[in-house]
Amino acid sequence: MAVMGDQSAEVWAEELRRTGRVVFPVRRRPALIRLAAVVLLFGGSQVSSLIDLPDAGKAEVILTLLGLSAVLCLVGMCVWQLITRRPVVIVDGEGIRTGRKAFIAWTELGTIGTPGGPAPLMTVPLIPNNVWAKHLAVPRDNVKDLPALATWLTALLDSHRNSTTS
Image (cartoon, rainbow, N blue to C red; front, side, top):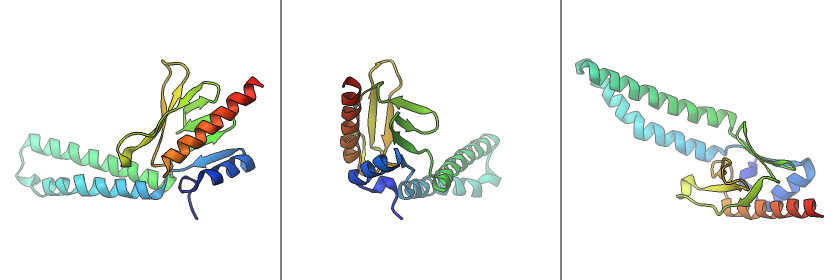
């Protein structure tokens, strides 16, 4: 079954019309790639450090254990995202939620930014009217085609603005 983030803007629009909201969970592929990168990049160095641990001094033991705990935390975070498929992005009639607590209402949303950043880390910024308010972003982890998402969200924002002014 395809994840909503891998679908097209037409499917998103139909889901929003049908259920009143569109839920974009974390896609499995980016989470798996991140997990593999963490294990390959950091796991190997930690294993070699553990092998040399009996001959190490106190400072080296402490640094090795700190590094190992950091790698285990990163692996745990990646596995948690893979299992729970969180944080989710939800688009509904009230606004856009990213994660559990971050929310921006359509009335508070100034503009949808242009997708930016390096390809694996690309995001769509959600820029509020209030310049001092927290800016939110939709990551590639949740949506594969970010330019299409930006276009779709801009059209939704325009329709919400037109419905409130009429």
